Image (cartoon, rainbow, N blue to C red; front, top):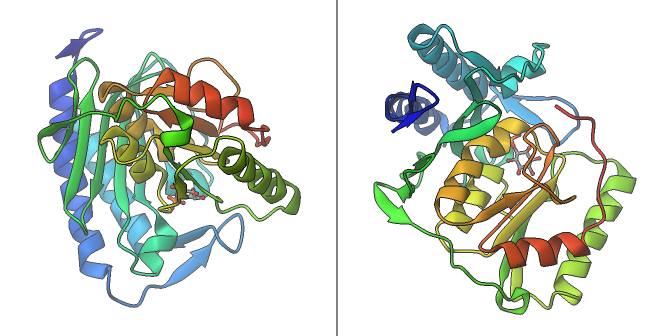
Length: 278
Ligand code: LIP
């Protein structure tokens, strides 16, 4: 599949290969004791494995695509600037769900997305522990372990299962708005239930596979939702900025759902939580 002169199939295959290699490192260390450091808050964690997986992914993809740009969770934490342009840009979260990884809770994923002209066009979300590989390229459909997936298509909020996250920030005012948002979605939306898996990439992939109707979060980063954005879109779902309009990968907020109606109905119930852009 070509996009603006780029061979998306080649990029997808490279992302799949390197996600599997990164996944091997996660599997090796998953049940071992980890050395943990904290970043922006006591709940924002990083381990040696996060760093090793990002290093592996970056060195492999930079070697193959030296003209491309790269944004990675751990590189940015180490002070690298986020440079987001129209250039082909890889957005990498080596271990999405680091807190889960630390606790050997099996929803963790290597998340590798690619944007061209600021649009997500390739997405790989790989959970090596459960051996689930979600993939998509623009115009090519979405897959779980090579089998096509699609969203549930549900349009009624009162028949929906909703995923949300507390996030890793611990500022009291933001946590309070988050709590009120969830409360409103449950009470006013009369939803079937809510879930939190601790990984934005997997949360969105669950919407893509039709296992939940929507996911929203404020405060996450571009590397958490870039790959899964194209996966949900290619599964027939809708991904937007919860403030309205197209999804904005730098806005640190996202809502993805099984239908435009579900996304709009939930968005109306949400009070925005402000974060500095990526
Ligand atoms: C995590 C996200 C999750 C969010 C956490 C964190 P990490 O990514 O996937 O949805 O709630 O705050 O950002 O830090 O484990 O890669």
